[in-house]
Amino acid sequence: MLKMKSSSRQMRPVALQDMLTAITQAASLQDLDHVVGTLPQKGGLFHVVYHYLGDLGPKVADLPPGFATYPEEWVTRYLQQDYAQVDPVVRRARESLLPFEWRELNVESADQQKLLNDARDF
Image (cartoon, rainbow, N blue to C red; front, top):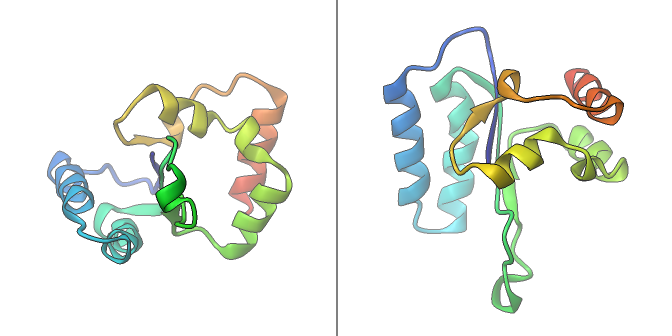
């Protein structure tokens, strides 16, 4: 899942393709972490999350399930509030392999709206 919260600038298709290419060419977790960390500046984004939603299996159970550019305080709050259960981003990522922006999401419940409002504070 590549979750993007964009600035008001429109991302060029070439920039998106470059980002996807860099992600798929990452040869290690360290490379992937570096690529994700540079995506906001290169793509005109505020934050990016790259998260694996499938079964990692026992061989890689100790590896992080993804990388994010969010502040640690937000990640802690997200986990404490168990927001993954209502996050429309998680739902969308399970339905599509393509990157997307928050403005494309369908917010269907008060819990989802609470999550998005809370996220805007970070």
